[in-house]
Amino acid sequence: MSGERTVLRGTTVVDARDGSLSRDVDITVEGGRIASITPTSDERPGQVAVVDARGTYAVPGFCDMHAHPLADRRDAAPALRLMLACGVTGFRQMSGSRTMLTERSTGKLVPPADGPALLSMPGEVLLPFNAGSESVALQTVRRQAEAGADFIKVAVVTPEVFFPAQAEAARLGLSTVGHLPVGIDVRAASDGRMRSIEHLGPGVGIVAACCDHQRLIEQAVSDRPAPKFPSAPRLPFAERLMGMLMARVLAKIVINPLLLAKPVDAEVIADAGQSFNDDKARELARVFAADQTWHCPTLIRLRTQQFCDDPVYRTNPNNRFASKRTLRNWRKATEKYSSRPAAMRTAYRNHYGRQLQMVRIFDDEGVKMIAGSDVSGSGWEIPGFALHDEFDQLAAAGLTPLRILQMATINAAEFLGRTATSGTVEQGKDADIVLLSGNPVQDVAHLHDIAGVVRAGRFYSPETLTATIEAIAETHSAV
Ligand SMILES: [Zn+2]
Image 1: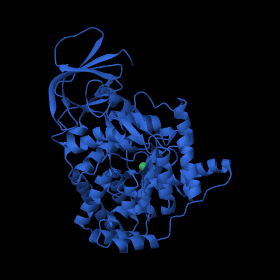
Image 2: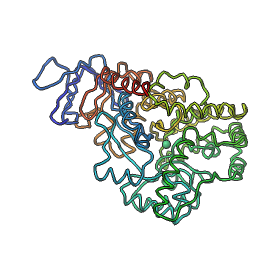
Image 3: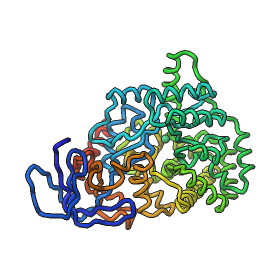
Image 4: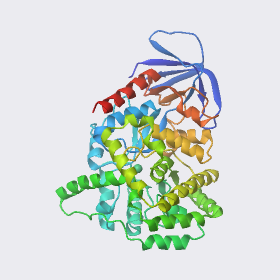
């Protein structure tokens, strides 16, 4: 709220660029901005709310750079509040629609004030039904550009569609991000300025490019029949209907897309694991780094698929923040996954180790990365908490706590071209701040210890945040 002034007294500011500390300072926020950062004092000017922030560490608000909280309108408001309670002050919405884009441009898409900011949003994700041929895909890209999409997201398209769609997006001033569909040459996609690759592929494409058996694996993958999707409808009203139907079908698949896998797919993954070559992976990482192709690994998304039957998920106390309907669907998907042959599940578990290794290699070789969870819609992912699960997985991959902090803050700002207003705690920047009770550069666990959140200049105490999310849990238990 403009005019509201708050002082965070006696905190330590962590510079997200290098982890250096400015101790014992007062951060004054006003009108949604950081008005000043000064040595701490006991002064109590009038009309100012003072927060005792001694012993805390101030970092920029976290950005969940791969999230879908707006996908299901019923769950959007609680999801956004859960995210804020976990220190998430901004998110990149990774799926949209023409309706959502129009609503945003006419001021009708207004996320709740006590939730994170919507930083960036595409139109519909490119799939066979809206990008089944080059001409249909180009039309889809043009329509999304007209409706105000910030970028184009590709999911499942053929190579014949992928590159022309990417070129058309670039011509219209939009970047392309998303998945590397089957059959796409990884290096060619990077060269063509794929701005960010999500989920390390997903699938086998990138890992195959790191393997001695690359050609064999690619052959095995291209021999597999393509997943069947309905093709593009001809009538405009049919398009809407198809959109709704697709949304339903996709919602089921999205919980755990690995349920579509066949034993032969797991065999390919196992082969990739055995012929994984560290040097080839480093070489590929250097291509991504040179092309400035970003990665948003969403490790937690990969882990909750490949270890979906891990009891840690079923018994997660934070499941109380998910609706009964959601939990029912997650349990059903898990049962199905558990009934898969043991060899298959083992292959996917082992594959996760390779994926951690790849993230470590990417980081070593200077590939730019951002942190994302792929919440909501994904199985066993609770909004907000899932980004913290991602922090832990990035740590398991061997990334330093500082790098993980950067992926969620300054790297996100750089990716979005917003370093002038966000990414660090500095005078003049947006007042989106997380207070932590321990130094996050020393230990990744301190990223979880939230001692307060400032969003658009308004301070939320841990008590307020807890009350908000416990009310959400109560709503679910009452249903
Ligand atoms: Zn996603």
